[in-house]
Amino acid sequence: MGLLFCMDMKEDSSPWTKLRNESFCVLHRTRQHQCTQTQTVAAERTTQKQRQHSTKMAAFTSHTHTNHQVIPLFIAFLLVFTASFAPVLSLQVVSDSGIQLPVNQTFRPVKEIWKLKRVNAYLKKINKPAVKTIQSPDGDVIDCVSSHLQPAFDHPELKGQKPLDPPERPKGNETTETMSNSYQLWTDSGESCPEGTVPIRRTAEKDVLRASSIRRFGRKLRRHVRRDSTGNGHEHAVVFVNGEQYYGAKANVNVWAPRVTDQYEFSLSQIWVISGSFGNDLNTIEAGWQVSPELYGDNYPRFFTYWTTDAYQATGCYNLLCSGFVQTNNKIAIGAAISPRSSYNGRQFDVGLMVWKDPKHGNWWLEFGSGLLVGYWPSFLFSHLRSHASMIQFGGEIVNSRSSGYHTSTQMGSGHFAEEGFGKASYFRNLQVVDWDNSLLPLTNLHLLADHPNCYDIRQGRNNVWGTYFYYGGPGRNVRCP
Image 1 (cartoon, rainbow, N blue to C red):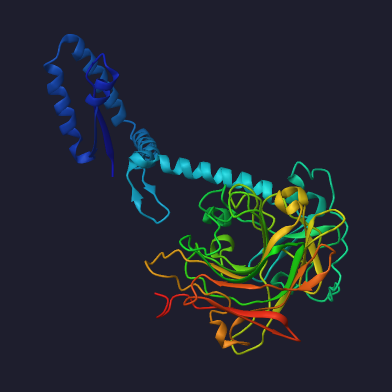
Image 2 (image 1 turned 180 degrees about the vertical axis):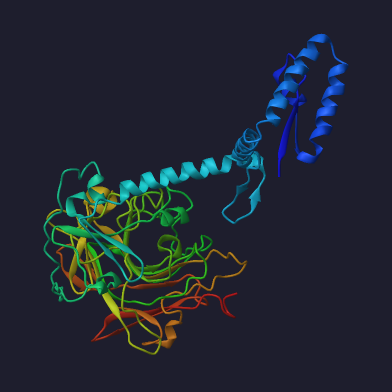
């Protein structure tokens, strides 16, 4: 079907007025004579100059009639030109939830782009070049990174150095290093990291975006640390010793996969090595297992470490997410999922943990599983812990955000109370501390603390096989814990 393009232009000194006065009409060929007739009547009412101008336009129109091939090309060009601007004219901003936002909120994508650039810059810094990469069955990516390139050596006091040789273990330590088990899912692939490298769980963009901010990623929330913990959302069921000088601690920790009901809550079981007051000078070294959907994006129990020298304010982090902990082992990935796990009324599984101060260099070393040395925290990271610890603590901790308006149903340990005992409740066994002479000793003057015993409780015992032990944990919200 033939189309005609007609244009009526009126002179005007303003280009904007000129643009406004231009009229475009696209008509069927059957109505071409109407457009021409209207144009002729208009021309007769104008001045001589306008008649000449109309004559030229008529000539142009007549020429167009004789060149029908040109018209479709011009129309096609016009349509393409207009379409190219359509996305700009009808710009819609869509939020992450799929809701269309008003055009005046187009600044949001710019902020998102800027945030992603910052996230990727952080990932480039924290994820070191890999000699080898291993895909874990649980979705993790494990990078085998040259030991001297791990994040710890970004620290000014460690730049250019290499990991230290293993220290002397405490006297009375019965475990000897074994290569048979690493107790982690990523090793199920049959792959391993070569000597001279350390396995590091790769941090993904989605991991960082789950955090409240890039600065807070990999860190515990700032909070006032109190022994009763009431009012800060953190609830404990622990045993602790204090009043002496401590140089380490050891225990076997029962591993479970407790249910965490809110993304911003966690459930953990760990050893705390503590020094300083419970103000802003608090020093802690922490190691154990935790379930943290915010940090890891799933509900697997994972081997983790933590440290701080200022009560969780600006120093320290989980695992290897900042310069601090120096890893020396090529078989353990800190932050990777632990396997196997215990089951209710079924097989029980626990792992050994020991943290102690090397008498020679003063660094705090970490042992995991069957005597595997994982690495160490350099003594210069700390203030009070450069000397010794003043408290050792063992047990469980959860976060109760009360996001639904009542106590969380996040479980601690197995999710069952201590009274249920072996095979049902979670436990710590063979609790010991390290003294000034680098010797392991049983605990004396032991204190028990359950912040909310109707939600999570604890019971201590002792026998010749397990030494000092305790059961702990609970389901969280129940008829006695509203």
